[in-house]
Image (cartoon, helix red, strand yellow):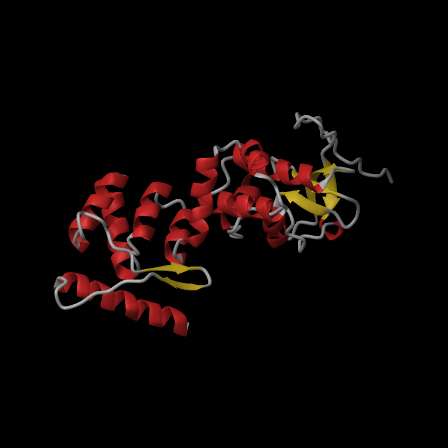
Length: 265
């Protein structure tokens, strides 16, 4: 009985990497628990399962090393293929490349496919900094200015509810920053998102409307009392008394109550 030939296909690829053969790799030969090169925060594979079951696997994943291979790009495709009960996955195996090259490949592949949400990009930048990449290297690596890099890094300090909106790409980064700066949360956040989407509010319009809603303090400056962060609540020195407006006192009471609840959790 003739052996089934391994499928081979020539593909265009990133300069400096030599893998050009698409191989059928058994899933059992892949260690998908190693997340070294994973930038995406969402692991949802529902959409991919539907696409794969209807159209098959059109794009190979990228692997490195030897058995068990590590995934460079294609975590969700492997998850979807496993869920479908398939035994093999089409892949490019890049042997002998350094982790730095593999990280760059993972990022480029996702950016080209426009697969990374703002939060995914923020996570990729965070991982690169953890690998001790210098500022100039970061700008070249990600193709972003230092100002843009800083904006993405700031996303990691946004409240989790706002981060989820960015992960789903419900609103742009500029709108998210305004909502985070004004500490909009809970039902109020949902109401503002509805207004942004339905009325097509710009970033400046959202900021103006929030100032109207919350009141401008001391020469038009919005007073920041506290800021929720991933690991707790940051408190800023402030004084508020009976001479301040009822709206502002109510706002402080609400913020303190939310801070207490956040710390309880």
